[in-house]
Length: 68
Image (cartoon, rainbow, N blue to C red):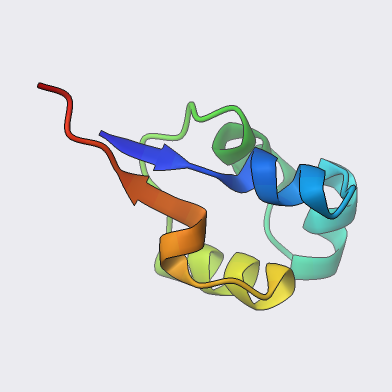
C-alpha cells in the first residue's frame, strides 16, 4: 500500500489545497484526492511539481507500507 503524506506536509507549512493548486498548476481535484489519500494513480509531472513546491523528495511525499 502506498501512503501519501501530502496532508501532513501541507499542514506543517499551513498550506491550503487551493493555494497549492494555484502555485503548482496541478488540478485542484488531483490535490484533493492526494490529500485525502483517495487517488488511484498520479502522473509523474504532478509528483515533480509537488516535490518542487514543497521542497521535498518523493520519499517524503509517498511511503510504501507493507500490508501483511
